Image (cartoon, rainbow, N blue to C red; front, side, top):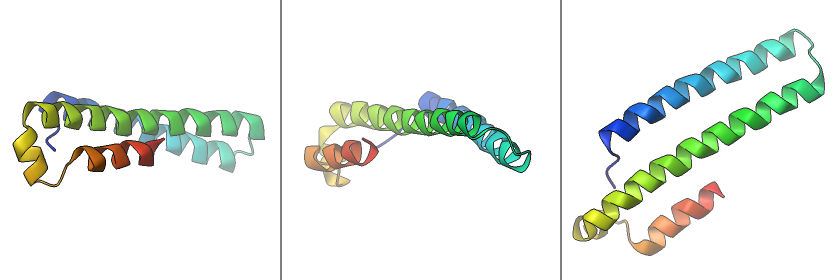
Length: 89
């Protein structure tokens, strides 16, 4: 399953942003911030990471649709792609 180069760049940018969020959460813990504020930030980072996963799979699925024989040869049957989606949900 190939990921489009533009999508790959977008995902790297998103992951860098998530990395910053995680560092912010770590600092919040060190600074003894309110639990509810920390949990809110954890939820936001978790959602952002899920979005990265779904965006990556959507791009890969588009590639599978465009190149079904190659995808099947690479081991990405419909069942395999479905299992990947279910891992994220």
